[in-house]
Image (tube, helix red, strand yellow):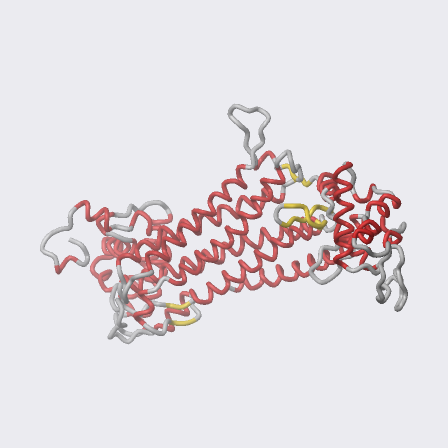
Length: 503
């Protein structure tokens, strides 16, 4: 007969047993269930709800049972439905009738959310550890490639040159926010629900604070109905994990692109690649593709639980049993992805020459040429137009901006032609302050030949190393700023490791 079978006149159907049972997946919670039961039994003994001798028997039996389960000596039963009733049944077989006192002053409703909260806390801690390992890899790569030039993109079109170190640190910032979200989720999870009973609390004089201390919870729950009826902490965790996967997926997409022959920015290590069963030349980025694909799986876990919870009245409903598989799958998927993504990233070979070449051929220094003209005194919109004409000229002739001669720049800038078409003189008159470097006309002076703005110093302005090194604003892509950012990341990681060790 079921442990709850006193009310029933006959056994449940075998099909019902299988459909109703959760032991095939919630057995993952066995350790949390036993540790929670040990703390509960000790509290029952200390408060006099049961004798200390009975509490000692329960604790000893539970400890033995934990060792047997971890040694693979225990088989769980579908007939006992879930991990809670399996543990109680096994304990009864081991120590006899005293085991029936273990469930005094608690319900499976507060028991299951206790187990789940303990699991979520450990899942968060392990995921944070894996994220810190990835951040350390990014730190090392960013430091190594603080001056490695590559094209930066908008709309997947080459925009401006950046450093590879700066590009990698963008992902570091995303992952730092992921760590922060997980820490926030941990705080809201770190609340003891045991003592809420089925929904209304209990008539027994529990010491909930004692149980919270033993199990490492920072607080006890305030409302018994809320304690057993919500899974927002699971939803929050799956939401945070979905964002981790979003960031990994974006990173993987770039690695997949960079690994293609058309880009050729990186080569994957053989240990993290696969070949083709028919095409002998292939080297496929399967790890990155699988992580990109598994992102949708974690999103699905999140939406499963959002959908399960959206219409449930207070307090507990059996629908909430559906939280476990989504939770377990989401956690395992993210941790598996982090575990393989980090060494894949650490073993990438970056093609520095190819990256620099792409930045140069893509006119990524065009904005700096416009800025050069602005410093000479030209209005930005006029400078933008001039550089656009020069880019068109280069495209038609297979040249880069750096390959243009001064006379070509002056002739093809279109300055005089544009003014003539507007019916004005072939001059550009403006009154502006000189640039910081002293270039351009001073106050009250006129520039009579726009083409004359191009002088020998234009080539220094166009050099990619100078283009990136000039971006020295805090958070910019200059090697100087990248190295400072790496230093800040090192300090962040040191502090984060300390906090994780204390959690």
